[in-house]
Image (cartoon, rainbow, N blue to C red; front, top):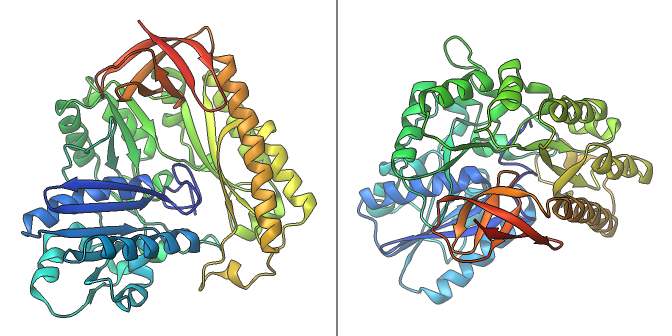
Length: 438
């Protein structure tokens, strides 16, 4: 898979994040990636429009078996605490394994990844006796633009530019949950971002399953860089634009120029890396090699010296030897990666990697721990280097925000969420900066 939001990468913690959005008598519980966070708002809108009430909707993640275990655990807890609520399960795990959820006594309905974005999906919930509605995701040829103008409890907004994936990494189940790659037309993206800016958002995150693949299915085949260049030109009031995740070998010349010349594009890039050893990368079926990733980071630093990088890395991929792992461990320092999202390999039934010779589970965990320690050292070193500098911060909560480089900052006094403020960095610890608000 290539630069994707729905994989072992960027905003995931192990097993996926859990974030609940409440609206009236509907709770949407999102697991996993930024795309699910975006779609959670669409789910809330469509369920409300259908007249659904007293419901808990689980927007599931299938990236690891641990993610699915957490979803099932959360469903059982919700049923105990809300015996009269309708419990609906959707998302990637529901798309790939609908029977697993349909067989749970705690679950009332199961709907697929397409149905969750349509009012008719919730009309099915209200009007039909069947337990599940999950259609063939591979039959979809386009992705509709949903006009989301607010994200409850968030300082930044997300805009979906693409869905699905045409690549078949050997460990990944997500294409079967999301379907083939489909892009949102540029005009629809511009209209969406313009609405978000009018609604008061200072920062917008471009998201999708494989955003590096943007535009290949659209007339004229626009690239991701061309789309972002047009977006920034046509929405001049947008203060900050952030990319979710990219594939190092798919970056086009327009995107390189934006990195070099456009201050509104945040100097924080998350690379879909997966490993730092060439043999493991080939067995994963990635399209880059070790040198490609390092060369990409160096080229971007030449263009924008203050840029920082994040990456997703799998520990203990099948056949990984200690020497292969050492290559992955070393790339953290060689490429200068400070935000690591590390996952012990999790075999997904039906994928080629599940049939390969497996690394022992305790060894996977031990290697993941060593990678995380390397990432923590890099992050602490970076945060320490920022003391004495000034940062532009988007306020997330009254006294917490994120810098241009996505570093977490504790502010000296409360500020209005959503605002972009200037703060002097006067201290740092292992996980965040401390800033004096100007």
